[in-house]
Figure (cartoon, helix red, strand yellow):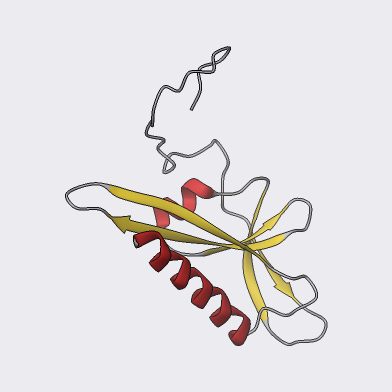
Length: 120
């Protein structure tokens, strides 16, 4: 992280992503696809709800204001003692492919491999 107007690093800092960014995340919409009977509830939001994913510690399907769809997965890695690396893995959803079980399994598989790679 850099100081404004400076090119010197201040070093790492802690950012609390569990605090609300003044947006209420309480509107869910049902999303379906013309080629499938599968539907899912998506959280409708204006920006990525990173802090909500970290706070809830579960994946969240989101529908952004531009119509983009994604799934946000929390990743927590414990590094001895009380140090935790918290990350959010964002997977975009192909709007032409229904979000069926096999597609969700692919996302979980990719997220698990990514999480394991972070621990090495």
